[in-house]
Length: 479
Ligand code: CA
Image (cartoon, rainbow, N blue to C red; front, side, top):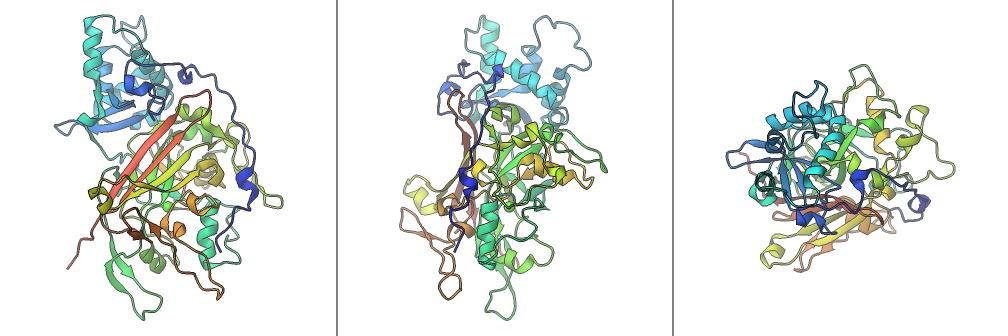
């Protein structure tokens, strides 16, 4: 049977320290009214970075606020972001130069290379957005030109990552998947010692809204004598959180556990699409390949570490008798406080549901802090521990985020798994029932998968990551 909720790691006490960062003060309001709605993911305290295209296809670096976005290049050229009294030349090391370079080229990478400029930018942007009268026709015009509805632009797939790495850091995911093959001993012996990961492929990172074409591939049924080539019959999603890396370490250097929190720029939602039948046939002995690299979707807004500070917490306590992490992964202070009290959900809408106007249905809901065995500073430190250079904008994904209960499982491989029968063989999978009467074990063509994540805590504004949504389209036959 899948692991039950008996594991006490889900009930370990967490601590959420108070933060006095003035940019997070809950009473801050903006003249962008939609951002003041308590249900908005994007209040003035969030200010995530994104990339859009205008009608001519020019990439524009933007910041999301409520239902609108701020056009950074236009705002910088207006002079409205400069500090009071800075009417002459800015010093060479002024953060505005970094922001200017990034906004001018529609490229967020300079900001991740020199992330301290973003602390300055947050304050400057908040000053521009703070509630109050425009105070003159010039500012009124600037507000109208620089802050535009999101709906006026195309969201650009945020494929900024030079490198994409995928981990396996949720212990409940590892246990449930492991139990399918090793019911008596689901976790492999290395799991509690070494953060497991593999190198993904950045060229197929795509944005929210991109159609996901069902992959063709080689599969072999257990009962078949030889493999066949055709459309995957077991297409799946994986709910993950992606960390966007700040700064850089040279090849040969590492990242210490205490340096690792400073390497976290922000987070996006990640859907690591997976073809389970292809995976089962190809993964031994070298690991995932074509079952994983045909598409990975990323949400459009990078929510920064600063905006998420109030929701940082300790991870689940290790059970008595479990090994402690090796010294290089142990850390102290901030590095032990980098789990996140973040809710994540997956919803699905079939083509028939959309045609009937039926709302998407939620099929899983979990909290990141209850699911993770390794936190991001540990993943970053381990990644660099052999001298691997982590680059600004690199994407490190958590691995499928699953809790111990069936409704907390972040992929269909686990979500429809019904354990083993009395004969020791896998029990028939338990389908998910949709409002139309349709059943799902794995994804069908036309299915739309929607992932959302948000943080909420008394005394702070809700901070959300928004959503990543994609529709599965039929395989493209190749002759
Ligand atoms: Ca994955």
